[in-house]
Length: 187
Image (tube, rainbow, N blue to C red; front, side):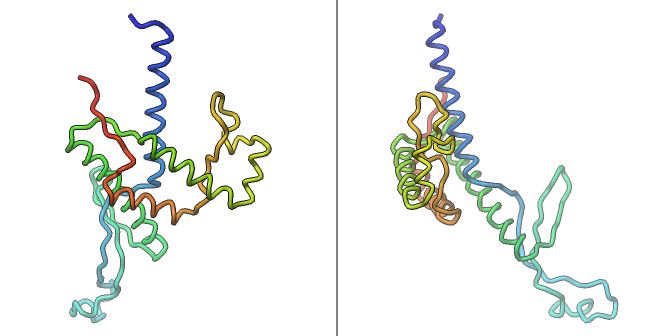
């Protein structure tokens, strides 16, 4: 039977893996399942040309549709909502692609490679150094993780902007997730 120290070490390792996976999922951002499409619609006016002539229908309009709790839902999207829904749909596709990759290869767990973690930490530190926030290093702020025992303070917030962050996520997806290691649980 394992002793208390071994059990604590195994628990800590499991918590670390869980935290890494949770952070990877959180990094995707909001997700939305469904279909986005463009259409032209008839109005409710019986005298309108759109009732007789398909080419005279109003629009184009962007719509989102999905099954929610077993019922079809449809929503007309304004330009701002369309942009948001498209990004959320892309995030869903990335998540689905990652899960499909794991399942097709028989894997149960994915975790970041240490080199990928180290490269990301170096990248965030490099960007951080270019900001006024770099002065925060001198006060051992919680924003630098100074309140985490047994860890050297480091940049915990990404200052490169959402666009760069999402571009890096897209590059990872397109390259087949080279930063991740896929493992099978012992049977």
